[in-house]
Image 1 (cartoon, rainbow, N blue to C red):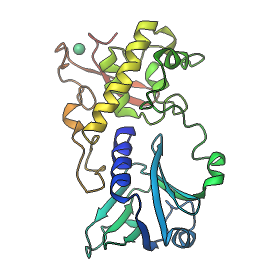
Image 2 (cartoon, rainbow, N blue to C red):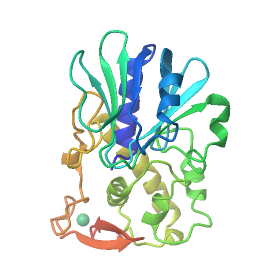
Image 3 (cartoon, rainbow, N blue to C red):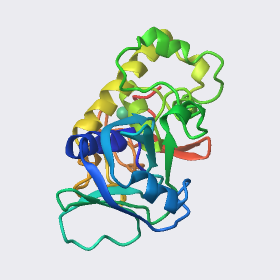
Length: 274
Ligand SMILES: [Zn+2]
């Protein structure tokens, strides 16, 4: 499932490749992923010029002239693909956009857990999709003390807290495990038991690890995530714990264990994570 690094990879690519382009010939095939009726998507986007691409957590925000923004969430298996001219659209495509230069942008989501919504800019602050989206871990304006204060009043395991989107937006099961290994904290630890130095370590682990993952284009599992040009992310070969239960810890060679935290499987090192 795409998390912050995968969505940020896509954000940078879409902005780099498509900012300034006019969306011609928009075709929306009615699908459950559309929270705006297909007809309204077609009418609203046809002829619109893409100005810039933002992100809130795992949601892409494509801002157009005329005061509209397209929200795109990849769900489990969503993809945005930029296809060369005259290539047939890939299967399971829901939205296709013909660009001025003949290329085609495609949104597809075979499992349909994602969504697409077109909103007026003036209405963005009221959208339920954006309510409760917390601080962005890649936003460097926050100090570790502010990060630490975010733990106040949050009970439960530290991993469950990392997954709370109103605490930090965009972290999912994969990167939560990786971050906790980097910070040497066990996922089952009560969030309230973390010492200030541990919270400081965790703060840096969140930022550093996500930034490294973005620099490698994120992680592709079962090819569910590919970037705008159809390429998989390269961070998968750097995963230290996720998917490696029973294998040796890369840091201390202890056999990695698995536990369930908040219903999610979690892999950690019982020796160097405390
Ligand atoms: Zn270890």
